[in-house]
Image (tube, rainbow, N blue to C red; front, side, top):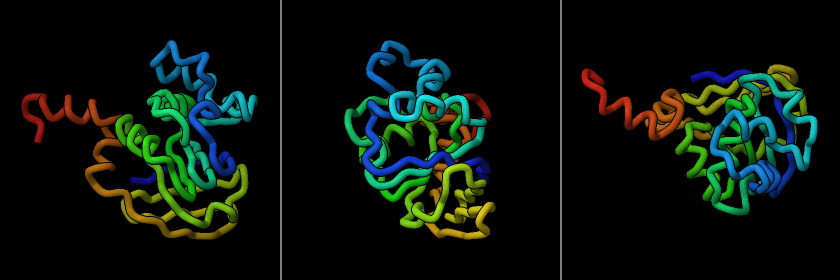
Amino acid sequence: MIIKGKAHKFGDNINTDDIISAKYLVSTDAKELGRHCMETIAPDFINKVSPGDIIVAGKNFGCGSSREHAPLAIKGSGIAAVVGISFAAIFFRNAINIGLPFLETDDVGKIKDGDELQIDLSNGIIKNITQAQTYKTEPFPEFLQAIVRQGGLLNLLRAAKRPGHK
């Protein structure tokens, strides 16, 4: 599975309130949440994002509360994946549940805002096309890729219940 998009760079300890302000938690609609993604720390973020783009973050991305709204807002904004040094455990789980892939690598410091990236989830390769650099990470396991392809864990389970599904 290949993801290709522009990098949107953030630092360490981006918490769930940074990702989506608590005042928007009355909605669980990904598109609505996406319109407000990152607005408290990057007010013009949503105007710069194109479908398929990639967030690049430092350490402990998604820390804070356990709300599923944070990865929903990211996905609803059009972001296709998140690359970071490390992720908060609860963000890790919520991202998987909604089908938002994330990859850990220590090489994020080399990536600049606006760089064109290509991620090969199957082989764990992140290519920085702009800088002609390649970074290695753990491949995304096939069962997690299946969740991403279906748009989340619930969608995968629903598909498995359909007649004729293998």
